[in-house]
Image (cartoon, rainbow, N blue to C red; front, side, top):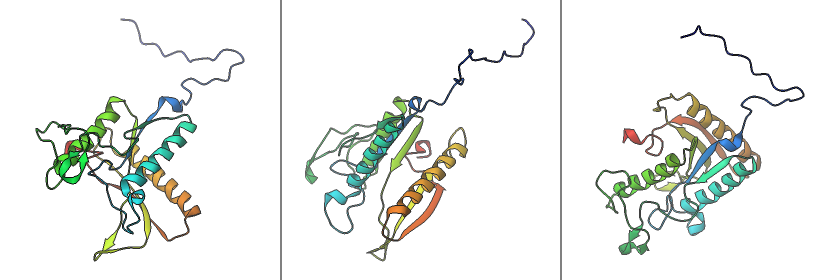
Length: 217
């Protein structure tokens, strides 16, 4: 063994202003999950009963596609978890008029299919979506959802934005918390500039949904 020597500084060639390990957005992969989808999972139906175009599964997909286009225009690689009205872990339930892909046990718990409470189907679907992101080696996973607040059975006529992240990662909550804060601030700032209706800012919160912390479930 030889004595440890200090590393030699990297000197760019004369006339070059290139940087070592310069930022390369194209090397980053962002997985975009448009919440819900398929025949059985509409998410939140349109509370004003305007039709499928205003169902959560339709609107989240529209936002996800626009998000993809924006990322790609900035040189970032975007991976769509779904780019159509589909379910990844099965959607075959003729009793409700659904004849989609066959069911599969995506999370390996020995169960699959459509149960009365929907828990089995939901967890298989979420695991299937996580598998897509993990197999692609995504650096970031963003899942998009739209909710409709109710009080006493009545829809509350106010819009708000909130961002959730998990604090149960091996590397700690710092990176994910910061990302959630930046997304939240950006969405609120841009929507406030164009929305002609009352909006609220609910900030970002650590909340361990299955999509971001499956080991806990």
